[in-house]
Length: 212
Image 1 (spheres, rainbow, N blue to C red):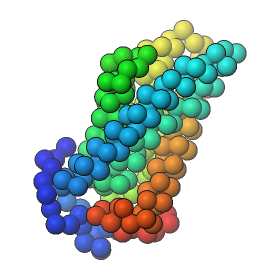
Image 2: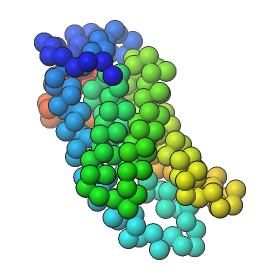
Image 3: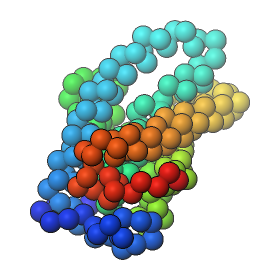
């Protein structure tokens, strides 16, 4: 991630559109907002973990079905990238959120930090592949799906190696759809809603009012 620095502006209005050049260096406001998103979702992560473990017995008949709940854990990486629009934003927000949840205490201990690293790297790679130029809904969907696949593969490697092939495929599919909807569409809708309030005015994401 580039070194944060203070700057007068994020980009010019014309640069806010997909395809225009964007500086990669972070400003103070970028760090502050990304950190705020991460800390807020770190608390959400902790609460969601409590809920996940509480309702887990309800999925005893078909455990892969619980994958539909997973997308909440993958939301901050995509959201952070869509708001900040700088290299490293997806990785930073997801990783910091996981660290906060670990500090609050989870059933999975420090392993959640590894998860945050991988689940943040997956959408980061999608935005990097798009050269950090596309922030529309399709990009958000791809980033969300990538985070979901990464999370599912981690879970299969650490926790569900004894599942049948059918259960494993079902889990990957359900978790990926959950992430696509919650992290992908959900993040995109959140950015649009926040943009209308004016709180994203310092960012290109607050000035770009295109629907798709």
